[in-house]
Amino acid sequence: MEEQTLTVELGERSYPIIIGKALLQQAPELLKDAGVLSKSKLMVITDQHVAPQYLEPLLTVLTSAGYQVESSVIEPGEQSKSLADYEKIMTEAIRAGLDRKSAILALGGGVVGDLAGFVAATYMRGIDFVQMPTTLLAHDSSVGGKVAINHSLGKNLIGAFHQPKAVIYDTSTLRTLPKREVAAGFAEVVKHGLIADESFVNWLERESEALWSLEPEVLAKAIYQGCRVKAEIVSADETEQGQRALLNLGHTFGHAFEALSSYSTLNHGEAISIGMCIAAKLAERIGFAQPGTYERTRHVLSLYRLPTAWPAGLTPEAVLESMKRDKKTVGGKLALVLPRSIGSVEVVKDVDEEVIMRVMREEV
Ligand code: NAD
Ligand code: ZN
Image (tube, rainbow, N blue to C red; front, side, top):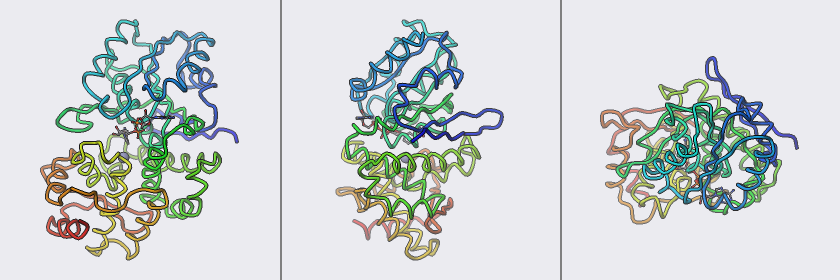
């Protein structure tokens, strides 16, 4: 199958999301099309899981095409989205002589993308960067220009909006992704359906077996549709003044679950899977959602082997406290994204805390 391209439109600017097999081998041409020319020095940032498989071949094609390329390899995992790693990469970039015409290539999952993107956003007040996602979850994180690192007091607290020049999504890289990470990625794919497209959810239900076994054609379609929903919402609201908040379905609960499990027992996708289920149950309970929305939400997530039940060991009190500290809250008021039906969500302000507590207590 040929590659597919989507465009993220941002006023005067736009950038392509290119999805297809073996795209890393075509990196020089794709970079040139995106305006990253061979006179600019490049720095590839990746992690220790991705590097052994995909770094050398990428460096080889780029060097053969005349690019001068440096690379920096971080330890895998959320703890690398840190000030310490940020400083380390900055030091490497300065020593390597990257200048304002240089570009950063983020080869990896959301951790690499967020960290490398934040380096690019701030190196010499901002240089170009290109996202090269290698996880399914990164269909979400690589699109939209939110880049960030964590502070010890909270996740993604230090960041910027910095849009990539292009997203080059080589779906062949997903073959080596551990199954638990595949499932986590599907949580965000399903989220994009639940937010905006009921027919996509129907399709995700029908094709779950083919998708779970990463059949190339259906997988590319799922990534395309997920990116399309994200790209449309980002195009309408680049800096999260309104509509973009809808992408946080399941995330206020999910961030609390992640934080309270110290980012170890639950990964991001698992946490938001449970979060989307609780949001749907709550929405039905207050008469906001169509009956059956919760059951469908739970069903489609369970097809992708995602958890849908309350995370063991967490108390509703602690979850509510953590939700109030989320940076999405303004003035301590909880604004939740709740479904109306499958494929349609809204931001609901001032949901009664007592009702939230009651729904959570039933789940424990
Ligand atoms: P990740 O980058 O940690 O990748 C998951 C694991 O898979 C890691 O161990 C990684 O080394 C490994 N891996 C990556 N690609 C591989 C491959 N092809 N083969 C084998 N192993 C591979 O995590 P993620 O789930 O991709 O991203 C999570 C991060 O994304 C979180 O930090 C989250 O905050 C962020 N995020 C950002 C946005 C955004 O808009 N910026 C949106 C959603 C999530
Ligand atoms: Zn997410």
